[in-house]
Length: 150
Image (cartoon, rainbow, N blue to C red):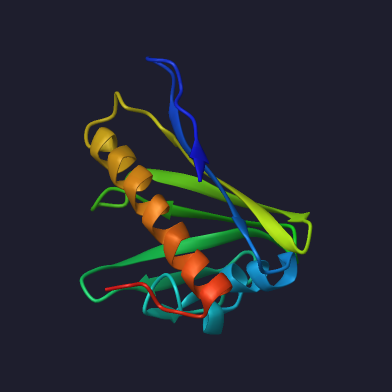
């Protein structure tokens, strides 16, 4: 995986890249199909993952909503979701997929995180660690057919 950091004072983005052995269509389905998404990310999805819809993602210890903005099969999946407990701070996540050999290169961007807003620094740190872990789980699911979640 690779990442980058913004200069001090500018809004921050979590940017990660990873390569999968799975083709772009299968990698896309891992994000856009509830039957695939729940195998590596939340334990349950309530609602649709179609563009323009709001769904609830449920883990054993928390739940949150996300709104799908765009879904381009095999190429791109975009959604918005909240980071603060009162839903007052929302970021936009864009997942871009590119065919690379027989596999897929995934680029993820989540943000912006305005660190001057109370609570957003903690959200940024949580997003940085959380997306790294989530992409490792996705790799386990796509490349090895295992569930690495606890």
